[in-house]
Amino acid sequence: MLAPVMILLFRVPPIWAVGTDMTYSAVTKAFGAYVHLRQKTVNMKIVLWLACGSVPATMAGVGLVQYIRHTYGDAVNGLILKSIGVTLLIVAVLLVAKPYIMRRQEKKRLERHVSVLDERAVLEKQRDARWERYVRPALTIAVGVAVGFLVGLTSVGSGTLIIVALTFLFPRLSSKELVGADIVHAVMLHLAGAMLYFQAGTINWGLTGLLLLGSLPGVVIGSRLSKYIPDRYMRPLLATVLVISGWKLM
Image 1 (spheres, helix red, strand yellow):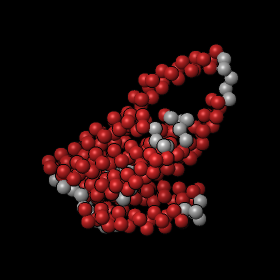
Image 2 (spheres, helix red, strand yellow):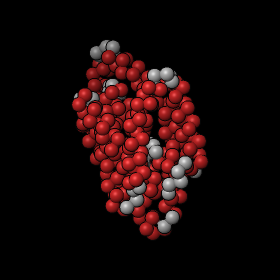
Image 3 (cartoon, helix red, strand yellow):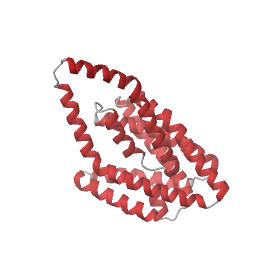
Image 4 (cartoon, one colour):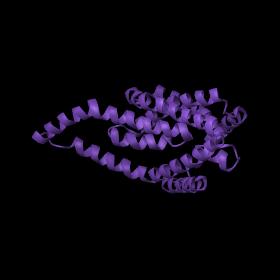
């Protein structure tokens, strides 16, 4: 989610900030994906369902950006700013709501395990079979389409949006599996977008290199600080920063 920082603090033009953020994210998330694949915490079926919708939608989002850029010039920056602003506000709300959503889904999952096998349970099992075979894959692809298009426009929001959606669609997944599916999918998503921004020539490679260099000590410092800052404080603080950033960009 570096695009807003580049725009607000470093005055990078929005279209260049999105292309640079997309490239940076593709590289950094690839390392996380490698770790999760080695730990076998990735459900590739879910990843592929998401990618079926998200990769074409990301390409459509980037294509729209480039079309507006070539047709209307600098007007594209206004579209990107408003899109990032709206996305940040959505992400901020979901960031605060995510722990409550995940706790609720975990409670439902436990209730299913202790349910008694009766006629109603048999009917629910049949309904669940239809859900798992037809409805859930279609909804997962639809989520991929929505998130992919947003990422193509803004490069932000994929992690929180995907994890919250997967929490509802796949309540039996553990936290590690949710994160693993999100990260591996994000590599495909950002790589597709980065390739198109590369073709358009709107990636600041010098800034990308500096961001990658800075991310190494940043990960170390952040991981150490996270031990001392409880999540219940960090989450509202981050959400507040996102709201302020989103409001300023709009």
